[in-house]
Amino acid sequence: MEIKKIYNLYSKYFLVDTDTRDIRKNTLFFALKGDNFNGNKFASEAIKNGAAYAIIDEEEFKTSDKTILVENVLETLQELAKYHRLQLKTPIIALTGSNGKTTTKELINCILSKKYKTTATLGNLNNHIGVPLTLLSMTPKTEIGIVEMGANHQKEIEFLCSIALPDFGYVTNFGKAHLEGFGSIEGVIEGKSELYRFLNKNSKIAFINPNDAIQVKKTRSTKIVSFLEDIAFLEANPFVNLSYNSVQIKSNLIGEYNYTNIVAAITIGNYFKVDYLKIKKAIENYVPTNNRSQIIVKESNHIILDAYNANPSSMKVALENFSKIKETFKTVILGDMFELGAESDKEHQEIVNLADSFSFSNTLYVGANFYKTNTKNHTFKTFEELKCYINKKPLENQYVLIKGSRGMKLERILNVIY
Image 1: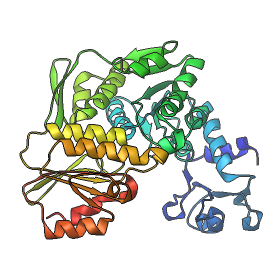
Image 2 (image 1 turned 180 degrees about the vertical axis):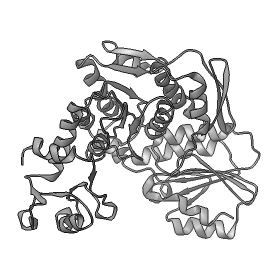
Image 3 (image 1 turned 60 degrees about the horizontal axis):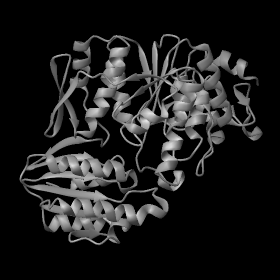
Image 4 (image 1 turned 60 degrees about the vertical axis):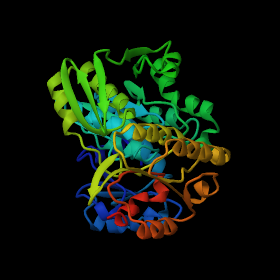
């Protein structure tokens, strides 16, 4: 079926789903496939549960007029998203970067939604599937769209831009993330800068941090809007406090590194003419979730749970910030960083050298990579070993930083800390 005909079906309700467990009435179900699942097998179930049509790419599952056979379901989803984007009059802001994408996206959405009807990426659904789904969640009523873009290889951001066609873009930073795919920090810079190249080619606008030399260099021929100059950092102990337009803003975000994320969001809010008092309210009401710099109190311990993800760049700034928090007794629990390729041993050792230099009350490393490092502190090859250690030596009256890659699932340690 031609994409225009599929679009006509979609545009009746502007609903798309890919999981039969969350089917909405009158939605279009896209039967995506993965290494361990085949959505085609659930097409009939999706229709039974309320889907108007199911898009499939295996003929044996075409059981009724409500199943639409296409050559490739994923490519059809992406094509539909781009076709929809071309119909929308909505300005799109795209974000990418090594660290802080999701937090910055959430802040921008909180601020802009004070004045506009916004649609933003849910969670971190920022890949070749998530970006199309984000676009397809927008309706003609959406006044500003905010699209997070993730990548771990060259040309991915370029591809996502070809679907989302952003009018504005912001790169949070260039750090040591996904080195296995990008090959080097230079590869990271090249990959993330694909957003700049799209904006430049299409005469669109980039928001930049003028204190980031790479951002300045990469946008020399691009239309830019620089960070506002009247935003002053006050403190981060542990929460970031700042001054903007002569008013103080007390955020619920931890660490000096989040100051830049807040400044970016304020700058974008100001560009779209959101009142500064509404900006203040939006930032102060934003509370991070999903294991991202959450403050959790358990008995006598205060825990900074930052276990959603980690790479050498984010680990470094988290440690440096934690060292500045004015508390006497501090414990660090660090889990392995993934997707570092040939640089893994070197990067883990450098993090150990940094963490050891701060002389925290307790410094605990867990995971096969940290286990191989040279350190004066405790290393544990498995989570179970770490768990046993803390059970034998409970933490009391400590400020605790927990950080590691998503695959480590370090939030489990909360069940051990009393």
